[in-house]
Image (cartoon, rainbow, N blue to C red):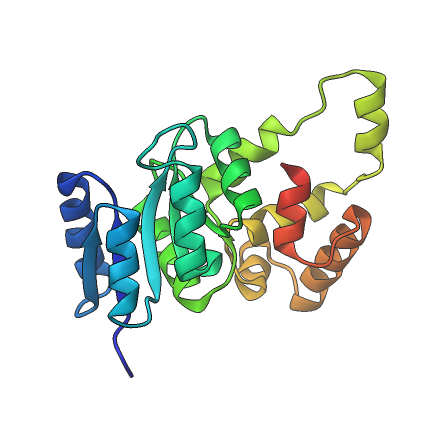
Length: 212
Protein backbone atom coordinates (compact mmCIF):
# COMPACT_ATOMS: atom_id res chain seq x y z
CA UNK A 1 0.00 0.00 0.00
CA UNK A 2 1.40 3.40 -0.96
CA UNK A 3 2.08 5.83 1.86
CA UNK A 4 -0.03 9.02 1.75
CA UNK A 5 1.32 12.20 0.23
CA UNK A 6 0.59 15.23 2.43
CA UNK A 7 1.08 18.92 1.63
CA UNK A 8 1.33 21.40 4.51
CA UNK A 9 0.27 24.87 3.34
CA UNK A 10 1.13 27.83 5.56
CA UNK A 11 3.19 31.01 5.02
CA UNK A 12 5.05 30.54 8.32
CA UNK A 13 8.06 28.22 8.18
CA UNK A 14 7.81 27.68 11.94
CA UNK A 15 4.18 26.55 11.66
CA UNK A 16 4.93 24.25 8.74
CA UNK A 17 7.83 22.67 10.64
CA UNK A 18 5.60 22.09 13.67
CA UNK A 19 2.96 20.46 11.49
CA UNK A 20 5.61 18.28 9.86
CA UNK A 21 6.79 16.94 13.23
CA UNK A 22 3.20 16.24 14.27
CA UNK A 23 2.31 14.52 11.02
CA UNK A 24 5.40 12.29 11.14
CA UNK A 25 4.17 11.01 14.52
CA UNK A 26 0.63 10.42 13.29
CA UNK A 27 1.56 8.94 9.88
CA UNK A 28 5.11 7.56 10.13
CA UNK A 29 6.78 7.32 6.73
CA UNK A 30 4.29 9.53 4.89
CA UNK A 31 5.60 11.81 2.17
CA UNK A 32 5.40 15.48 3.18
CA UNK A 33 5.85 18.66 1.16
CA UNK A 34 5.75 22.09 2.75
CA UNK A 35 4.21 24.94 0.73
CA UNK A 36 4.16 28.65 1.54
CA UNK A 37 1.96 29.78 -1.37
CA UNK A 38 -0.76 28.57 -3.72
CA UNK A 39 1.85 28.34 -6.47
CA UNK A 40 3.94 25.97 -4.36
CA UNK A 41 0.81 23.90 -3.68
CA UNK A 42 0.27 23.72 -7.44
CA UNK A 43 3.85 22.56 -7.93
CA UNK A 44 3.39 19.89 -5.26
CA UNK A 45 0.26 18.60 -7.00
CA UNK A 46 2.22 18.25 -10.23
CA UNK A 47 4.63 15.80 -8.58
CA UNK A 48 1.88 13.31 -7.79
CA UNK A 49 -1.64 12.85 -6.34
CA UNK A 50 -1.99 14.66 -3.01
CA UNK A 51 -3.96 12.70 -0.41
CA UNK A 52 -4.25 15.48 2.18
CA UNK A 53 -3.64 19.23 2.19
CA UNK A 54 -3.41 20.76 5.67
CA UNK A 55 -3.95 24.51 5.87
CA UNK A 56 -5.15 27.26 8.17
CA UNK A 57 -8.11 29.44 7.21
CA UNK A 58 -8.68 33.07 8.12
CA UNK A 59 -11.25 34.56 5.66
CA UNK A 60 -9.94 38.13 5.99
CA UNK A 61 -6.24 37.24 5.88
CA UNK A 62 -4.50 37.54 2.52
CA UNK A 63 -2.25 34.52 3.20
CA UNK A 64 -4.97 32.24 4.60
CA UNK A 65 -8.01 33.78 2.95
CA UNK A 66 -10.94 32.68 0.85
CA UNK A 67 -9.12 32.99 -2.48
CA UNK A 68 -6.35 30.69 -1.23
CA UNK A 69 -8.90 28.18 0.07
CA UNK A 70 -10.83 28.15 -3.20
CA UNK A 71 -7.59 27.71 -5.15
CA UNK A 72 -6.59 24.80 -2.89
CA UNK A 73 -10.03 23.19 -3.30
CA UNK A 74 -9.69 23.46 -7.07
CA UNK A 75 -6.29 21.76 -6.93
CA UNK A 76 -6.96 19.11 -4.27
CA UNK A 77 -10.72 18.84 -3.79
CA UNK A 78 -12.57 19.96 -0.68
CA UNK A 79 -12.84 16.44 0.75
CA UNK A 80 -9.08 16.05 1.04
CA UNK A 81 -8.32 19.39 2.70
CA UNK A 82 -7.79 19.28 6.46
CA UNK A 83 -8.74 22.83 7.41
CA UNK A 84 -7.92 24.58 10.67
CA UNK A 85 -10.50 27.32 11.10
CA UNK A 86 -9.35 30.43 12.96
CA UNK A 87 -11.58 32.68 15.07
CA UNK A 88 -14.35 33.66 15.05
CA UNK A 89 -15.12 29.96 14.62
CA UNK A 90 -18.81 30.19 13.53
CA UNK A 91 -18.05 32.71 10.77
CA UNK A 92 -14.85 31.02 9.63
CA UNK A 93 -16.32 27.52 9.55
CA UNK A 94 -19.51 28.65 7.82
CA UNK A 95 -17.48 30.43 5.13
CA UNK A 96 -15.17 27.44 4.65
CA UNK A 97 -18.00 24.93 4.28
CA UNK A 98 -19.89 27.12 1.86
CA UNK A 99 -16.68 27.33 -0.21
CA UNK A 100 -16.59 23.52 -0.40
CA UNK A 101 -14.40 22.39 2.51
CA UNK A 102 -15.75 19.42 4.45
CA UNK A 103 -13.03 18.50 6.99
CA UNK A 104 -12.82 21.30 9.57
CA UNK A 105 -11.02 21.69 12.91
CA UNK A 106 -10.75 24.42 15.51
CA UNK A 107 -7.45 25.98 16.58
CA UNK A 108 -7.18 24.15 19.93
CA UNK A 109 -7.89 20.54 19.09
CA UNK A 110 -6.45 17.46 20.79
CA UNK A 111 -4.06 15.13 18.98
CA UNK A 112 -6.80 12.48 18.89
CA UNK A 113 -9.14 14.91 17.14
CA UNK A 114 -6.39 15.77 14.66
CA UNK A 115 -5.92 12.08 13.94
CA UNK A 116 -9.62 11.61 13.29
CA UNK A 117 -9.72 14.62 10.98
CA UNK A 118 -6.63 13.46 9.12
CA UNK A 119 -8.07 10.02 8.48
CA UNK A 120 -11.37 11.58 7.37
CA UNK A 121 -9.46 13.70 4.84
CA UNK A 122 -7.52 10.64 3.66
CA UNK A 123 -10.79 8.76 3.16
CA UNK A 124 -12.54 11.77 1.62
CA UNK A 125 -15.40 11.82 4.13
CA UNK A 126 -16.89 14.88 5.92
CA UNK A 127 -15.66 15.71 9.41
CA UNK A 128 -16.44 18.47 11.88
CA UNK A 129 -14.59 18.52 15.19
CA UNK A 130 -16.47 18.40 18.48
CA UNK A 131 -15.22 21.89 19.31
CA UNK A 132 -16.61 23.40 16.12
CA UNK A 133 -19.84 21.39 16.29
CA UNK A 134 -20.48 22.76 19.79
CA UNK A 135 -19.67 26.36 18.81
CA UNK A 136 -21.86 26.18 15.71
CA UNK A 137 -24.76 24.66 17.60
CA UNK A 138 -24.65 27.49 20.15
CA UNK A 139 -24.37 30.16 17.47
CA UNK A 140 -27.45 28.76 15.74
CA UNK A 141 -29.73 29.07 18.79
CA UNK A 142 -32.89 31.17 18.19
CA UNK A 143 -32.76 34.74 19.52
CA UNK A 144 -36.30 34.70 20.85
CA UNK A 145 -38.21 36.65 18.19
CA UNK A 146 -41.47 34.95 17.07
CA UNK A 147 -40.33 34.41 13.47
CA UNK A 148 -37.20 32.52 14.55
CA UNK A 149 -39.08 30.50 17.17
CA UNK A 150 -41.64 29.47 14.55
CA UNK A 151 -38.87 28.49 12.14
CA UNK A 152 -37.02 26.55 14.84
CA UNK A 153 -40.19 24.60 15.70
CA UNK A 154 -40.10 23.09 12.19
CA UNK A 155 -36.94 21.25 13.21
CA UNK A 156 -38.34 19.85 16.45
CA UNK A 157 -35.71 17.21 17.10
CA UNK A 158 -35.98 15.13 20.25
CA UNK A 159 -33.18 15.29 22.80
CA UNK A 160 -31.95 11.86 21.71
CA UNK A 161 -32.06 12.78 18.03
CA UNK A 162 -29.97 15.88 18.72
CA UNK A 163 -27.55 13.82 20.78
CA UNK A 164 -27.10 11.25 18.01
CA UNK A 165 -26.65 13.91 15.33
CA UNK A 166 -24.15 15.86 17.44
CA UNK A 167 -21.98 12.74 17.81
CA UNK A 168 -22.24 11.84 14.13
CA UNK A 169 -21.39 15.40 13.10
CA UNK A 170 -18.34 15.32 15.39
CA UNK A 171 -16.98 12.44 13.30
CA UNK A 172 -18.00 9.32 15.23
CA UNK A 173 -19.13 6.29 13.24
CA UNK A 174 -22.67 4.95 13.90
CA UNK A 175 -21.18 1.92 15.69
CA UNK A 176 -19.17 4.25 17.96
CA UNK A 177 -22.27 6.33 18.69
CA UNK A 178 -24.22 3.18 19.54
CA UNK A 179 -21.47 2.06 21.91
CA UNK A 180 -21.17 5.47 23.60
CA UNK A 181 -24.94 5.83 24.14
CA UNK A 182 -25.57 2.18 24.98
CA UNK A 183 -28.06 1.78 22.11
CA UNK A 184 -28.40 -0.69 19.27
CA UNK A 185 -27.28 0.13 15.73
CA UNK A 186 -30.92 -0.18 14.64
CA UNK A 187 -31.94 2.50 17.16
CA UNK A 188 -29.11 4.80 16.12
CA UNK A 189 -30.09 4.41 12.46
CA UNK A 190 -33.70 5.19 13.34
CA UNK A 191 -32.79 8.36 15.27
CA UNK A 192 -30.49 9.48 12.45
CA UNK A 193 -33.14 8.84 9.78
CA UNK A 194 -35.84 10.66 11.75
CA UNK A 195 -33.61 13.66 12.49
CA UNK A 196 -32.47 14.05 8.90
CA UNK A 197 -36.08 13.71 7.76
CA UNK A 198 -37.19 16.51 10.08
CA UNK A 199 -34.39 18.72 8.79
CA UNK A 200 -35.28 17.87 5.20
CA UNK A 201 -31.75 16.72 4.29
CA UNK A 202 -30.25 13.44 3.13
CA UNK A 203 -26.89 13.28 4.91
CA UNK A 204 -24.89 14.57 7.87
CA UNK A 205 -22.96 17.21 5.93
CA UNK A 206 -26.21 18.77 4.67
CA UNK A 207 -27.50 18.79 8.26
CA UNK A 208 -24.42 20.68 9.42
CA UNK A 209 -24.84 23.26 6.68
CA UNK A 210 -28.48 23.75 7.66
CA UNK A 211 -27.60 24.26 11.31
CA UNK A 212 -25.03 26.95 10.49
